[in-house]
Length: 74
Image (cartoon, rainbow, N blue to C red; front, side, top):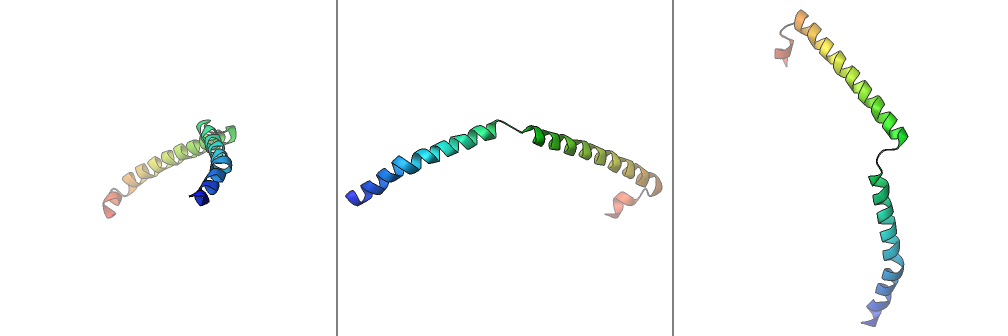
């Protein structure tokens, strides 16, 4: 039985506290949200997605006028 006590004590003294500290530090960083740079990138992506959506709508309108059967060809 004593052969398991020493490794268990070493784990509880050294590994477990370090593990808990690193775990809760990463949880705190994850809960902070996006950094300024990440928010800027996200805003840029949202703007590009909206532009692409407008372009797609325009292309669909053009296709509806010039080739009304294009939706049925799929």
